[in-house]
Image (cartoon, rainbow, N blue to C red; front, top):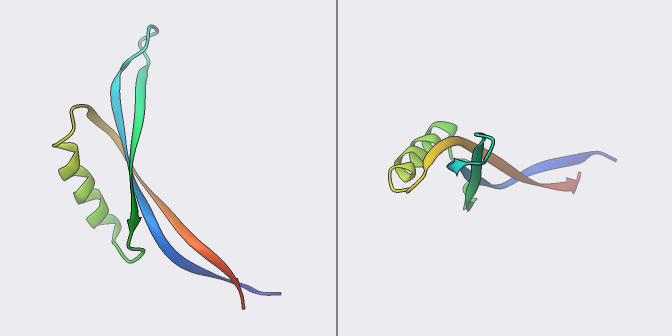
Length: 74
């Protein structure tokens, strides 16, 4: 049976470097912002992440977009 993928929003994840471990490797933590509109453009999310990074105590190491979808029988 065919299945349709229906966009159901997204999550914006800021990856922050909070320090280094005893081996000198970066310690990373995630901050997630859920319920982002599926129609939000990648550029808009990146711009928001950069603006929020300026308000953070720790250094921004990466930006992730996690798309959600519902699977429905066609």
